[in-house]
Length: 336
Image 1 (cartoon, one colour):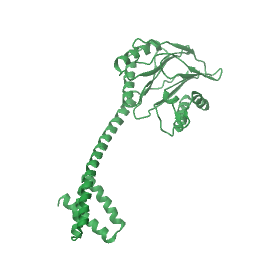
Image 2: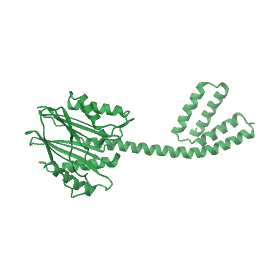
Image 3: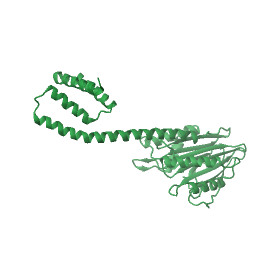
Image 4: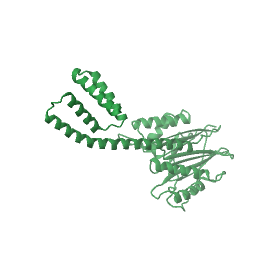
């Protein structure tokens, strides 16, 4: 017996059972039958035709008006069937795309992964969470043989896959720099030329690059239009803006970047972040920089990693657990 013949027989059996007894069990069998027809790609109009055939077998003298109503229903369901099949096709394509994005996201996490340096002098914490599956933020640490710890944080103006591809390019451009890196301004100038030549003119990248000398505890840094961070001075218990001027990467290949320097004392903190931190929106509007400072103060007694984790949780809660932009926060604290 063919599947169609089995389907006809089974449907007629279910229909007769329900008409005679009108029990919930028959409705449950109808649901199971429906799932089976979907598995075998039976169209809605075929179900209507099947129903009409079964009714005629059970009630040969059915009125002409009722029979004609089935014809109208059949035509309606033909249109519905086309739309349903198109919907199923789109869902299938969407699922394939989601699977590919998941794979790309996992690859990006692997490619952009960085290890937080462990030194006796510094306590470093970092967190980076994408607003979508792909991250448009980038942060990276390098600890070389010259007792220098370098930290980079970058943000593509935009989100999603294009931003993620830009971040991958930045990562590999940085890795192509000389092993004994020059000062932060030279690093940004090199990366700026790469971005200007390889990134679409509609996309721009902000970046902060700093180098911490473990011998003399001097922090040298430069910025390419990146969100100003904070500098916490333990001697005064005050937070200061970590200002630095510089043009965004990719705007002008001849751009030059100025290097700045700060002497870091025990207890001082360097706080870096992307605009996903400062552009956290609540029901009252965007939070202010002083709110971020207060959050850091609330957890200042904890380790750097615990501070960034707790600040992220607080800001995530304020946004009802729905990030509107990629979130990256880094804290470098001198402990000895």
